[in-house]
Image 1 (tube, rainbow, N blue to C red):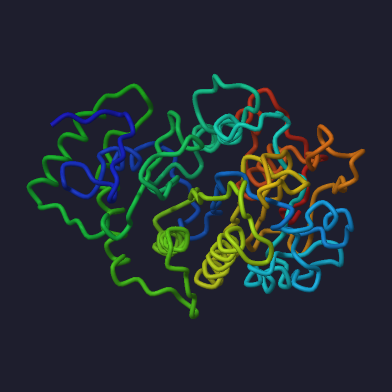
Image 2: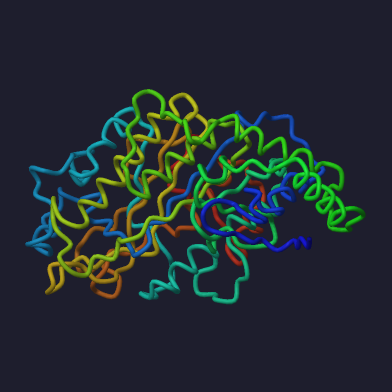
Length: 418
């Protein structure tokens, strides 16, 4: 049996050799000699959701106090009477009504006019730049969350430190720091290796790392097995959300349910990543109802269920939504919107400076638009991401995470409580 250090992920759970876990999973357990004093249940956690396809931030966080919004979108604007008002100027799309209690208890904030300084309207390039953290530079080999894990070793004591929920590892977590991708937590938890196979894998693991010069420990493969047993004790097939939380039945709701389950299993999750697709609304976008509304309802109900399910554990959790860019201010001839520039993002959790729409709002006046057509970016996404890394996860070297850029606290939008 040959085991390499390269991350190898298969769909249907973290499965290799039909044992239910990838040997790199064990490598995570021995990744660092540092053993922090913080317990897994006490460590700060960041959950990232990528809304792939470019969400229409103007219909997600609606500037209903601005008449130009209604003049530019005669067929797709959300009627004033249906907007869930937040502050008299901005409001939630009605499909996001489940988030209003989180706004009221100040655990939810929105950042508007946020995005990339790069002007591309290519989904592929814009997503790559947002995940690499180096807009305009295509040659970056790794993602910014992987660089964070590589440069901050404080919590590198668990194979579950950074986990993506999906069939493959996303760009944002790709790199030299070990990370996991789990497509189906239930399938992963159900597979119980036989003792003989377990012993063979243990010996292979120890042979790989014995005497290695990479800084990996050679004596803690048992820790990986312990983590497997912790997960089995959580019994994924019998998981019941707490506090009456009701997750949507689709992939997004299931993903948030599995993240909550892993967090509550106290296996040391610090980074969790989830993809949500279908946000490219060129045709028949809809207004208060329609295809965008359906996706927003799925988002809002999933986030609300997640917060309800975690309960007091949300005090250490921040959920960040992101999207590669926004949509045009003016609706197109197909009753939709085309690729734009700035968008809106959510931050949710106990550490969040909630009950506010953050960021400098540039307005919809044509004189202030980007290239005469789009909402202008006034918050570089790296300043928002950098603030969350620094003030929530405690990162001290943001320059290592965002090479060629210096996130400045003076530019932080204020998403995290001081």
